[in-house]
Image 1: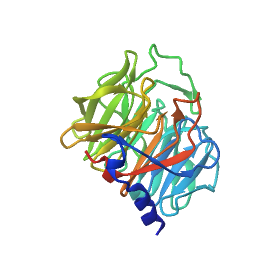
Image 2 (image 1 turned 90 degrees about the vertical axis):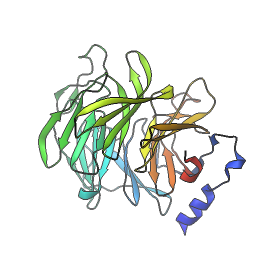
Image 3 (image 1 turned 90 degrees about the horizontal axis):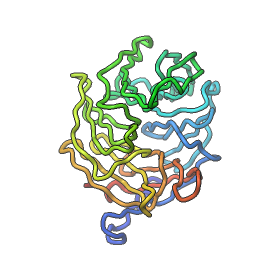
Length: 311
């Protein structure tokens, strides 16, 4: 019943809004003040959010946040990126360390995988293979000590494959087309990356990585350069949300990998580095930092029906 009422609340007619502008509705409030950078991943029932040395979860059914009681505290101070692997019921988080949270038992484990500290991680077709790419070069001088001043630009073109069945099997893959701090999602077995930031500034290119051939290609451009955005997929479409300093509205880009087309909407949310989740018939947004108020972190969860933003 809660889920039905929630969807009904979000299904407002498009005619109420200006053309190509959509309105997200506030649903609930997170516990405490979240970090500026959150690692998060969604299961069929919950969103798991990795904050400063703890986790909190959101229940889709109950529309409620609660603290997660773990067997131990995370050993690193933050999680930059997380992904859920259904076959193992595990969430893998990358950041200052690499850890696994087993969602059935709530056991937290430091994987202690030696790496070059990739910032982003995505699972390939929900298998044991993880693809992690940098954003920034941060070589480990020890497992939990990071030296961030050992490269000229700070941006990296490296991407690695991890086989979770073989924790020491980090393999370097074909590098990104250029050193870039970017984000992406796998759809139909291919990883799509959008814009991002490099030493030249913001980018608008769309890159596609094919794991079967270990190769990259440029597959298009966005209408505007983007960076510091949130990204999600429902398995068919990719949703990108952020804001620009010179516009009064935020933006939502819907990208269709099947024909490589995109459509942009204006939104009422003006946050950068936010978190986006597509679940069922709803697109959720939470976290991020307001561009209107200096470094004010968003602790609200917003949502919209996916039916309102189909391209």
